[in-house]
Image 1 (cartoon, rainbow, N blue to C red):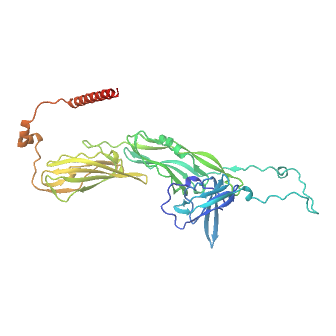
Image 2 (image 1 turned 90 degrees about the horizontal axis):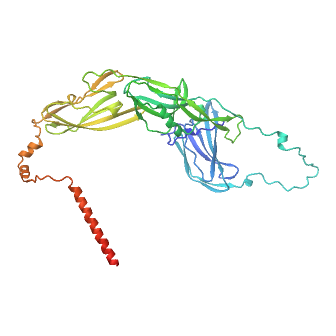
Image 3 (image 1 turned 180 degrees about the horizontal axis):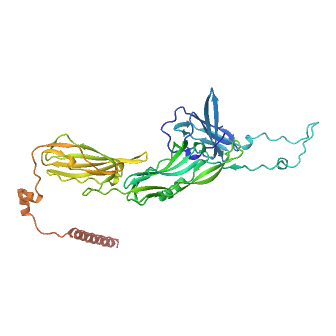
Length: 496
């Protein structure tokens, strides 16, 4: 049975590795052929179903004229194997000699290479039957045939090709990963197109890059923080829906963080696809398809958003997410008056971009500077995870045990538990050394230092005009203008 494979199975990047047991070969047609015949490039695949393949090469002087595919099932010793041959046809524009440059074709992650060829396109007469012999008297004993009417009158006019539109098993879907969420809880939303494997030759994407922006504008939520995923190639993955196998194409995915208790509403969106009608009586060597269009609609979806419980009195605003703390220090010994480099990392799933660094609590005998903030986000498997690294500089002034849980705390709201919690550091630092008095103010230091006292006594206390640089620039421009005028007068005098 012959069926063409739709072009949406062609990605820009191959799979990491071909399926086990797959065998694929590349085949070129005749290098010398008449202008009224096709040149062909085909690949033969066995041992695995066709999932994706790269584009066939372009040949200068030729035009691509459709693809044909042939599937053959062989049964040997009770075992069945399926072999697929996909052929790309090329029609020559004119007679002559053309060069097919070396190229490669990727089939299910396996790369097939060809060294190219020199193609010779011959005149049409070179491919047909020899020209008819010169007219002469018929042989003895044989009478010439008598023609009655033309061929259309004898056999009837050829009937036009009839096409039928088979039913397809495909649908468009907008899928949130949860039906309800707390304010600030991440909600992953994917836009998917599902297609039955048997219908790959019936459908193809149509101007998808132009249709996607209007769809995304309809799905955008004004009351939510949006973290969009980077656009990648549309690659299908195999899933089961209602117990039936499907190819699922991920068209777009986004993570929303609701900012209020207003529900997230995703309306019905439409995607137009190419759909081919198949010839009722297939003709060997022909495409046997007629291009048409079909629009698919998704079902509207709603995600209910719940307001957070009241914040306890005196508590700081909490970050919503599934977080944990990690800590690190830059040394193993800690002395008074010396700077301690302390790193506090908040990692997990949630809106880390909006997570505010915790404010250090005042502790007697400790100075806290910072933090320096570094954010790392990871988007994978429909989740946005990452970590926020906070680097502080601690300067202890008194010896003893320094409990960092008394200095820094991260209030959070855990959506799975539905309650507030506080993440506290666990490190305790043993600070040694004598107590250090904080440095005095700079003004007091200047008054007691003999060098600065001498310099201040002899310093000029005359106030300077803040406009002095501007006046100097103005006078310099006047001097330059005068010099240019003198040079012009001298040049004019010399000419006379």
